[in-house]
Image (cartoon, rainbow, N blue to C red; front, top):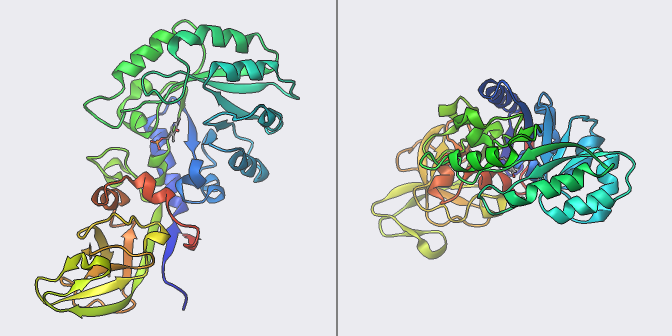
Length: 356
Ligand SMILES: *Cc1c(COP(=O)(O)O)cnc(C)c1O
């Protein structure tokens, strides 16, 4: 038998989560965010499951080209736009929609000689201070784009920094965006998963859900199931050894866990080289034989330890869920001081992936 670690991707869950997004934002078109290899779930597989979306958003030309090669004719947005003028010929040929986030990119595009017009998403910085035009640069940048025969449709966009935090929300950036674009009459795109779920007033013409499509919650205080979402990734393995740990014995590198009494432990075939977070401390939840227990000690490259004190019947071969149905990735992430986004996208190429 091969190493038992496997990531199962539930394509029906992906489609279900897209339907949840549709119901939550009935008036908007959905740009399914499938960057980072479909948040680690596999780009081609995710696109197939989410083909009912109205468009896809990716980061790289490679991802966009793969989607076109798979035959998708959907609008495809390049979330970081183009990095070099040389990319514009392919952007036009593949009919991609780059995000224009600096005034000089508008100038470069306006001067290019391309085989088709290019539709663009023009991004405004409403307070995240990452990408986008300063609001006062919108008018002149728009004039450059509108003056160019190379530029087709223009959608105005922004991205929220704190839509996932109820104490902050989207009110201030949304008001600034509204003020900035007032009277322009152009389509707009603002909402990530958190804004889509929590702030209907932010929906606009195109919503951009990412994490919720994969079944995880963007909010710290609720998990995906609370929001009606289904986890799309099930990272599962098995126990490959068990031991009796005697009182006072340490386990693993650094003996980071020391037994306070005699207890049974299991060794799970999954480690940080598989994408499991190395910083997950003793106490991080996992399921053995479908029942919740906790990790013990330090995560190693290829293995981690399960506390079998409460599960004396567990044995070599017992199934282990690292995250998935019955154990939201959000909980594992919180225990490890990170977020489900990072767990999903860190899934290592060496982990076999199967569709269910
Ligand atoms: C990644 C990304 C999204 C999706 O965010 P989620 O929190 O995963 O829903 C939306 N918009 C932009 C610009 C992004 O970079």
